Image (cartoon, rainbow over all chains, first blue to last red; front, side, top):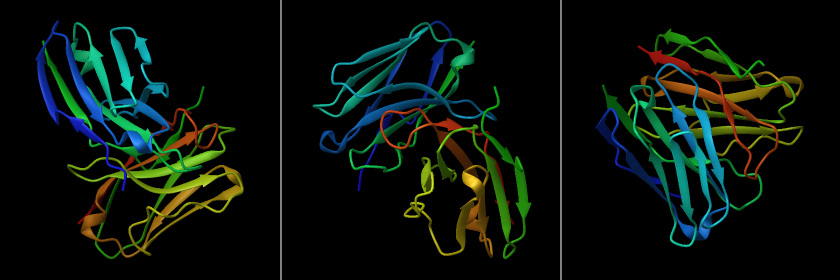
Length: 113
Length: 115
């Protein structure tokens, strides 16, 4: 069974603080990693899809890195704003053909103004 | 452009009743997925459709759950004889390609409450 672990489970930060959280996965069962942001009462929104070891992607104040050899990805938010408050989901696409994504339980971020 | 839509947005039903949840994927997307998120849990895969291929039903939790995708577009998830443990947010997603590093586009979900 492919297990995707996210930590911390929840996080409270002050506006302006930078923060990061982790997604861990078995390096032997990896094809692609997805990060999604899920705001309350909205649809989960794709942030990044990453496949290559050492890859780093950036979207505004949010960036992500990927280490496929050790099985982890970090998501960084620089200068957190209240609108960043959401649940951040990590999902792994296993290498076997048309298999679905396996999601972690998410990190719930609250940014306090 | 139009995204993935789901209906209803909220559904309250009595235990033992049947419910149908609808998903309209993005036009042209060949892959369609159903997930659910129960309280305190991660997104749980339920079923996946890809073009005209037989659906991957490996995530359906019991035979009370079924899904159809008509004409390669709209999908309906049916839960028969609902139980309280079926209460969850049911999410639908679609993508342009199955597998690979392709983003999935999610609908807003249907919040199902079984009383």
